[in-house]
Figure 1 (tube, rainbow, N blue to C red):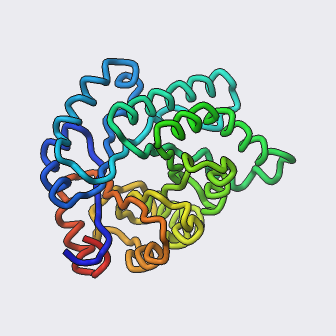
Figure 2 (cartoon, one colour):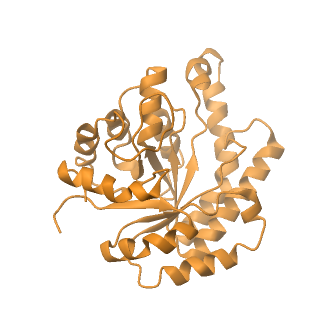
Length: 272
């Protein structure tokens, strides 16, 4: 093995059946994505946890999950919706506790609209932050108690610094930053945001998680690495300057392209 950073991957428990040996042999990080749907979280998800734990017997990498996100914002203006979102996040953290997962991905509340409009409305930026704090208050406390970190992933974020400031406002080890390279590249190509490596630099050592996917700057492609136009040398150059050792998670639509993506990055001298 070389000193290149080690890649992990995101997948469902079903897909874990195929990739478990690769993950275990490389001590690679894993993000399980089977606990996103409300139907799963409202059902008997312990059976799914038990299956995952059996498959992960002997696993020594860092384990996380993608938390719920469909249909809501963590900054909803409606207090009843915020209460529901808080419940969903609590369900996600219950899964983390049962799995022994130490990270949960949640979605940024910042949008293209908010980038252009928040500062035109007095106090709007502060009120957004207050709503996020109201939504996450109990989740942060529980995450601290179980040794789990919620990482806030960029979705439409045009300014890479605003999400970092939001994470820092909690002053808690249970809230950190995630970057999705495809989302950042979309924002760069379609909304005039900085390039992907600027997102890494802005996050600094608050960065604890990265979704690695290639894209064309127009849509959220989740292509294999090398198919799109992300400047990977710039991205990994920025990552190399960090001390936070973020989890580098391949989040590819076609899991069969994981080996080719690893091979591309290894041949480029960037990751393994």
